[in-house]
Length: 119
Length: 116
Image 1 (cartoon, rainbow over the protein chains, first blue to last red):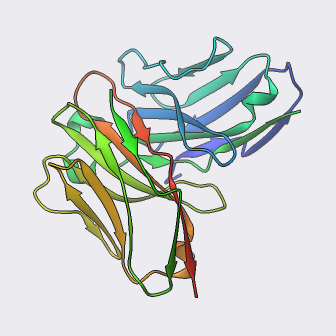
Image 2 (image 1 turned 90 degrees about the horizontal axis):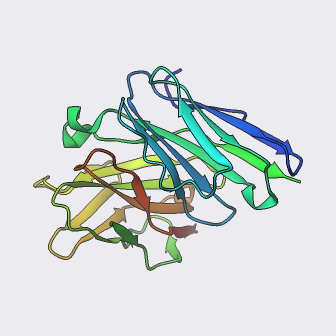
Image 3 (image 1 turned 45 degrees about the vertical axis):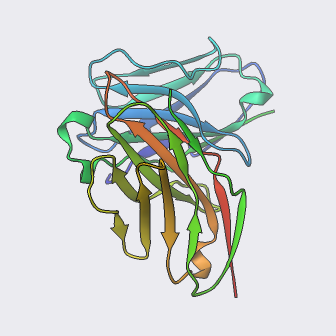
């Protein structure tokens, strides 16, 4: 597709279960971000992938959260042993490599998010 | 570390009027990009406008313009001729262009309500 694609769009899970959220970035985009937004709040950075560089994991809130990016494209965010406070919308974004883009084209595009509810 | 500050939790504007949404930032890096996003009630993040730290002119995109004052570290969004469909949350964000990895840092947002 033309935009960032995320799945599932909605997920309801029981406390203690594991969940996987998928992000398919825009074709050719080597930078990929995961953010979390709780109801009525701003965006909380989780993790950032840039090409073959080591990811910036500084925003992951606990070791229950992990993410991987296979083949430099699709990314999966995994939350193990989900808790109610994990309920949020998880947003994925992508962009072209920073150093290959003139400033006017350095745009980051978001997917529509995966709404996670832990009951 | 970079920081984005949006001091207006909520703003009202009458239809067809112009409105300015404030954003200030803090970074010691010389190279960075500033973004504005719109988030309607449906939840998607819609890119509006981008300003690079070395850009000589203020960015404009249709009814959106960015009032970039580098010395004051401000990047206010100006929406001209407001429309009812402009009612949404607006987020200012910054991304550094130096270093091996750089995340997009967001402000807390401003909720804009356009009235008749």
